[in-house]
Amino acid sequence: MPILRLSEDSGSEEVLPFARMVHELLSLPVTMRSKYNKGVRLENGKVIDNDYTGPVLEEALSKNYVIHTIPDRGAYKGVPVVVTPIRDNYGNAIAVVGIVDVVSTIDLASVFGNYPEIVRQVEERKTLS
Image 1: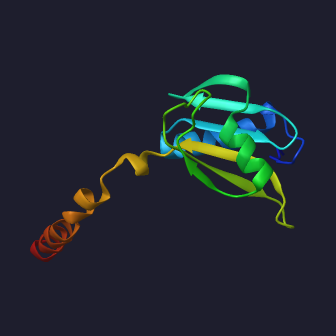
Image 2 (image 1 turned 180 degrees about the horizontal axis):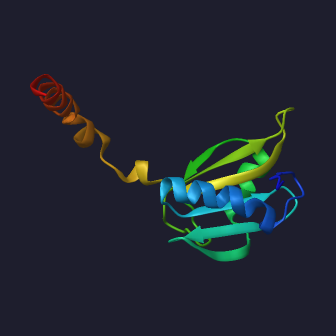
């Protein structure tokens, strides 16, 4: 039976299934690496790089916290990203995963400004059924 394991020593082939899952779930560019090895970069359903690291991945790994930023260098220079550590049971960062942060590019006030109207329409349709 196949087993997926993630450790601070995982190579790109070992982090790939986890990165692919996030990529397919969110349909966003994803990067991932372990503490001691470079990892992967996925975009549009394809592995773009299987020896990847980036400045925000490195920072989130060393500081062991979530980072929302716009990198000033690297593959995602000028693009909002969010990177989070993956921690072991003791709270130590063993890997990091990052995505392009599309939420920061959305005008949430305008999106959710229509939310009460959408809820009202859905409720009306339920009562008509």
